[in-house]
Image 1 (cartoon, rainbow, N blue to C red):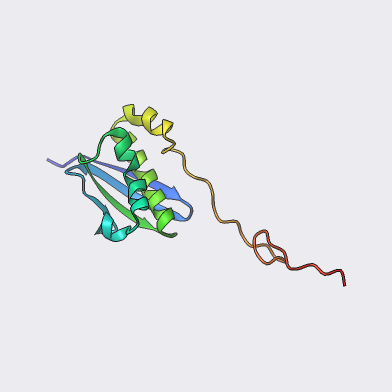
Image 2: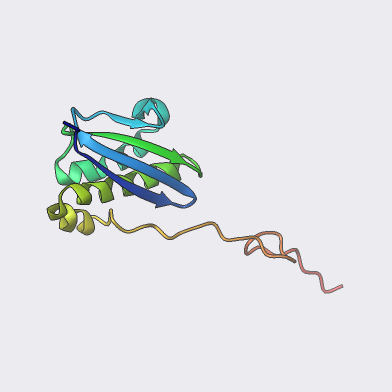
Length: 130
């Protein structure tokens, strides 16, 4: 008999994460590497574990994530978003807890494009009257 798996997609900045949840002993794998090897910063690991801690699922589910694009912070945010959505797919009663913590909202902040005639997105070249 096939094991039950719950999948979801999470996004943050330019990062996209495909997340798979299944029953297990709490292993988290990102891009075929353990979470400690992929995210060396403790804050990013805490960020990823947040939806599991809020719902009390730490040590009950195995998480497998495939993430690409962006940097470490954006990728961690994408994985967190994907885990939150996958948890709702597994049990819709968890939605109020996750919503209250703000874990279901896709963070819309993206990098602003550089405009022509300017040094950057907002910064101008130095103005001289003469």
